Length: 244
Length: 320
Image (cartoon, rainbow over all chains, first blue to last red; front, side, top):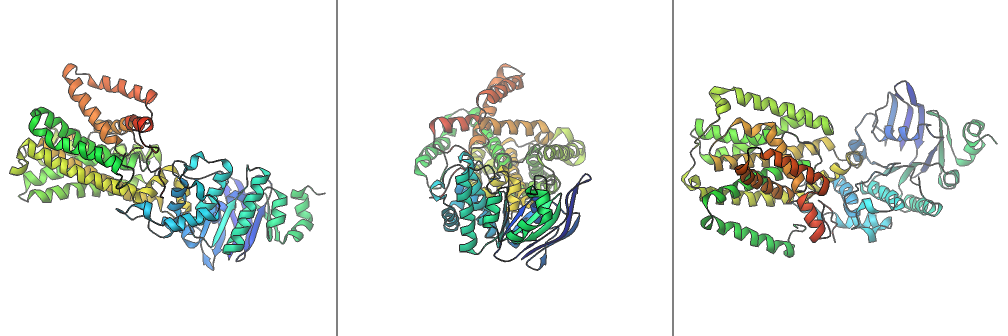
């Protein structure tokens, strides 16, 4: 479904991503792991168009999407959440998700029609599917960190994506919140057939949930494979898992 | 206030206020009628700025350029051609929106402060052209004694005309504010990066917002000519842009009607403090300092927080 081939990105001489490869099949739950600074977030930003690659190719659904701006990539069906909470803090939860749904339905430019009566059902369905419906009229900025991370996912779902990219969906969450969030992600993958690409620091989470794992080190792809293959790989053990 | 279309609680006070405004002109002195009409014009101007400033989060630093362009377009059509007035009335705002589109095309490529700086330069360029082009615009003398059709020739006539246009524009701005377009614009204000990621073409949306706002500024510009019957280069001088900016901050730029209130306060201050001292801008400076320290949300923002509805900020409402 998604194929990243030999992609490079440097910031002032520093090679943040250096020939990374990644394949995501339809309906898969794929994890990207690697130490801090390995280039995971940069890779995600390249896929979703926030950054432009220096070299390499990104193919989504047999279509070259390299160098497209973020809003067009979203229209192609890739939605994302951000590592640092990135919501609309002054708007209500309902509005946060509604903005995405309106955009997806190409109604963002409608004038003279009250927005509050539009796409109400779709928005509420999404809020319900992530368990935030009872807080729909709260101001997003007043939510707990855990709920804001969930709201991130809800906003991404508002784009009705084929594939969703989650940049550390559990960063800064307590162990209970982490497992609740991962259950939610698993449920979205199973129930709605979403393809999910995520990165994560917690190894237990990764090896429990992911069907395929890609390991990055210093901007480069070391290996991509099934969890057990990755666990056995020597280079991975040396570079990342501590070489026990 | 104005939270919901058909919210009767805030509808009745507004209606009462509107009726008071309707019956005022025959019973108050001419001078006050003029001042209130000036408040309407300036208020609409400030409301149009707030569409991009408060709701859109763009630093529209030279909004007066569009106001002036429209006023001049209207005045020139009335004095240099024999076209009927309504053509000038429509051409003014369209011209303002066209200039808004042109300047906006350059400005939306930049962010925040750079956006504002570029706009001041481009707007000042238009000011310089009008200021210098003596045989067409009258240069620094401007154009005076523009004759109006008989229905607008009396002060009362223009008062009612301005009030009518103001109410229509306020309803229009309110509908846009509550529309998906307005909601998206507020979301861009809060987080442009996130908006891109949910598939919104942020620059195009901002540009569209600027065009709409400059159109309404153009309507205010035309109304100014209806009231004053003259135009002069000060209408597009950057000082006026600053004043309008302050009106938005003073009234409360995250509220809907705040800028209207801010405009009324500034016009009143200028008129009544101006009687006692030439240095009324000094008073304005003090007001501004007090505002920053004590009412960072503006007068309307403070009032709503203190007495009003549970939601005081723009767009903070969900649907039930």
